[in-house]
Amino acid sequence: MGIAQGTMLAAIGGSIIEERRGYAKGILPLSEGVMQPTRVFHAGAIVTLADEVASRAIYNAIPKDEHNRPLKFPYSVQLSVNLLTNDPIGPLTAESTVSREGGLTLVDTVVTTHDGKTAALMRSVHKMVDPAKAGPHLKA
Image (cartoon, rainbow, N blue to C red; front, side, top):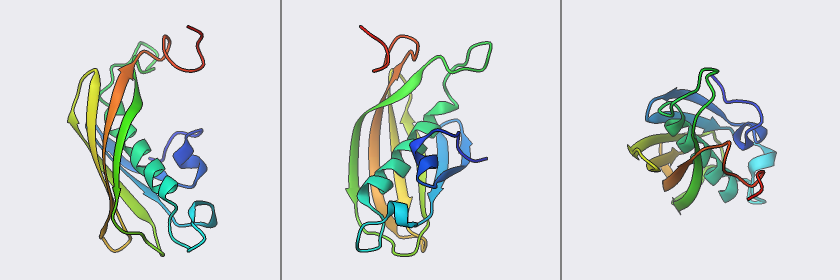
């Protein structure tokens, strides 16, 4: 399966390993590029994994145009993350489930360590926007 090239998760060595409407699962191996000086995962890497997996859980429910391009994009507008433990071995696994679909979509994500302990819990809100009309690349 894998993740589309050009995403932040791919840039740090992670990938999506399962996805369907309302659900996605991804992994992130431990590497020098995602470590703190204490040789465990950097908090930013954990949040990146969780956020991208959450977005993929939403992606399959988004209507597509005749060229299979999504008509909406799930911009993350609020992330609430509890970091509970860390992992000196890896990989981390994130599983996301859409709890509510709509203009504001709610996703719950659980990140686990290599031995199944809960490393992080994230609840995120994603605003569904038209990528042709919204975003920092467009002028108002």
